[in-house]
Structures are given as structure tokens and as C-alpha cells.
Image 1: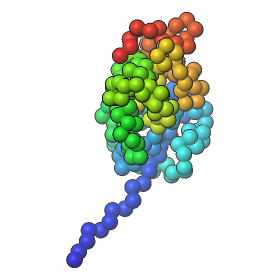
Image 2: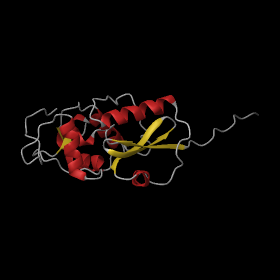
Image 3: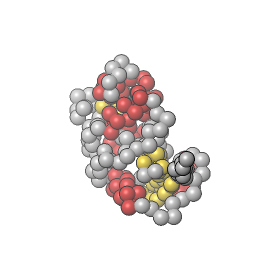
Image 4: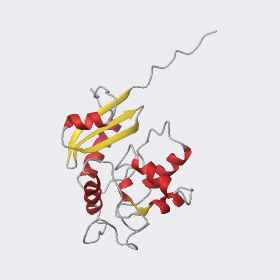
Amino acid sequence: MMTAPSEPPLEDQVAVFHTRLGWMAVRWRAERLQRVVFGHALRASALTALGPHVPLCRRLTPSMRRWIERLEAAAAGQHVDFSDVPLDMEGRTRFQRAVMEACRRIPRGSVMTYGELAARAGFPGRARAVGNVMASNPLPLVVPCHRVVAANGRLGGFSAPDGIAMKRRLLRSEDVPLTPRESRVPLGTEMC
């Protein structure tokens, strides 16, 4: 009886590059985006933030090159649609996947509360759990967690370097109105 040869294990691929938001690093597996980190002052910091060391790509595939160009454009404040980028959701629960997919559909220039995102993902009443998913989002910008705010309009947290200042910067680049103190979004404005 003949058996098919086993496929080689999937290898992670990593690229690091400088953007207007600082150094950015990305990791793929089998042409699926696995992780994005940005806002780092140093190239080495961006690579460290990805987690376990993975060798850098020597040759980028055409799709990887397009994703990097789109991430660079997003970092420059341009409108970029990432809805077609395949994500590596391995190890994520059904709830986490639903929340991340619902977050991907928040339009540029709009915000949504954690509670609204929970309802949109099919889990009404799970705002706090949605906050946990957003806090551990491995794909910021592609899954635009910066567009999710607290019920009172406060910006909440943000895990990228410079935290809430980076969240403000991203929201400003999308023309989301902020209050004079710039720590909250006026309720009723461009909420999804």
C-alpha cells in the first residue's frame, strides 16, 4: 500500500519594515496573516514584540508584498480595506473569531462600543469579554481594535507602544471626532 508523502511543516515567515507609525513587523503562516505589531522605535523591538524568534523572509511572495504595501499605506493614514486578507485564526475560540470578524467590519472613521461589538458578533451582553479579545488582538490595523471604545465614549486602552496616544493618533487619522480633552469620542457621532 502506497502512502502519500507527508507535507513539510508550515514555517512562519516574518518581515520587518519602517512606517510612519514606527517599525512594524508581521508574521505569516501558509499565506495567512498571524500577527502584526507596530509603533516601535527600534527594529529589534518590533521583532521582539512578535514573540519567539523566527528568521526573516528571504523572498516575499507577491501576496506578502501586497500586504506589506497595504500596511504601509494604512500607517500613512490612507484608507485601506483589509477584509480580503486571510487571517490565521488557529487556536482561537468561536467567540474570539466572531468578535474579530465583526471588528473587521467596523468602517473607517467610525467607532463601536464593546457592547455593540458583542451584539454584532452574536454575543449580546458580553462587552467585558469583547474587551479581553480586543486587548489581546494579534492583528491591530487589520482587525481595527482602535475603533472600539467604552460605552461612555472613553477610548479605553490600547496595547501598541504609546498606548492610548497611539489609539488617538489612529482615530484622528480616520477623522473620528474626539472631545477637547481627546480622551473620549462624543456619544452619538459616527457610532456604528
